[in-house]
Image (cartoon, rainbow, N blue to C red; front, side, top):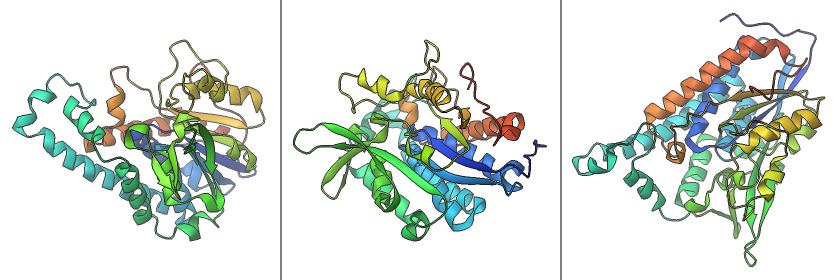
Length: 338
């Protein structure tokens, strides 16, 4: 595909913000691979990724991106994205084998792809508390073995958010892991939903960062970025998009810090555009089909993950064709159709 070229005289200091959404993270994988494989990113030596911020699945993809870029550039980031998600697909194949057995035929009737059948949803909810976040931490450690070398001293910075629960009061507060605070455990904490039992780090319990901000865009704005590219994984508000910080939306929840923020990101992006006009804003969004229910975010069937990745690749390639020449110059985002 012939892409518009960036001016060789224009410095582009790019920040990436990656939203959480469980299996929908495979869409972001497709986006990232398309960007990293593109001429627009590879041939312009003036384009540098300064920092990445991510929540939940976005924290995972963000960690892989940061580690890969710091250790070997675009090719290494792509390699780890592929190997990491291939392991997730392997887990999905094992789960899928259950649904092919005769005794479960009753439970799989009338379930529309990509939503999960009832018994699989319940089975995943019956996993021992904390086991899934712990498995995720172990997977991060396997795929990114030289963590301290490439995460704490490389040129690309990572920010990951989570929610901390006070042991006595049970009140929750927002926390951002950065610098030396970043560990494989903090990546797992960022995606530890309540139904997964949270994640313990040094005697403290953490929950999914999406209960507070999804993603958090505060720290990345302090990294000298000229442009911020946000990958969203949640549907747009039915009432339309209006500028509003996601913290304001969270305050309306009955129990702040307990409900995942989803569509609020679209209002937050419009807020960022209004409040920080000096940052060129770009958005690549998964168009969430109304037929996909919440279980589709838990579905790690390889077919579904491949479909999501293909959607991300398609949308990123279209964005590159339409907007790559705007990097470093102007926003490509428009609230009516981000």
